[in-house]
Image (cartoon, rainbow, N blue to C red):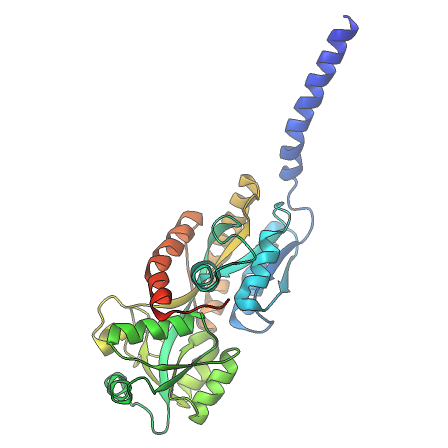
Length: 327
């Protein structure tokens, strides 16, 4: 065997080793904690959901899943951190309709690529939304809400946790379908919205059940209509928007899914998708989610992508008509 043959065989073996090395490295995944980025402060519904599902996934993965809160800029700070993270399976990110549906229409420029920066892994949960009125001196039912809105010609105040939030856009969509105008009062988060609705400072607001269940059930605010397609056992006397406003097919949610950097390897992404689905199927996880006002939402990457596309078809024209911008 001459030197040329030896060198040629060595080169071929080295090439083969390089080809196998990434697969071998990925086969050992995960070897260290997985970071789960959340675009909201600790203690809110999104954070609680991530910690609940992350704990269930951690037990199955055999490594800790550590939640990292990066609030601000309507989840864009967290989305940028996730999209720019190494695509090695050790970073995941909660991305819902605010991040992947609303923000691409609300911002002329985003710090991440909303179409090609994040890889959908699967859906997680939807937050039920309830149109509520102040208890004293407000609308007593859905018909009264419509009548008051029409009579006041755009002067009726409603609160939301911020411009471009699911609560804001669901209210504007409802107003459009009812043919009424409302005056939007944006807040910084759901807690001050609920405080002012209870105090009667604003006349109405869409609350999510994860945050607002206690003030709804206690009678401190008046629930007028549930924006889901079927009534909730937790508030069985509250009609759906389809029933209350005669709007067949109307439904609006805040929903969330799990994503990873777009170049995360296929086999690692598939494992994350499988473990997410298994965690969401756990009866204990499902029970806790429903206790805090969330519905488990099943569906892998394909369903995640379809939901993004279907909601963009609904909300992007609405955002354009309203002239909303966060730049």
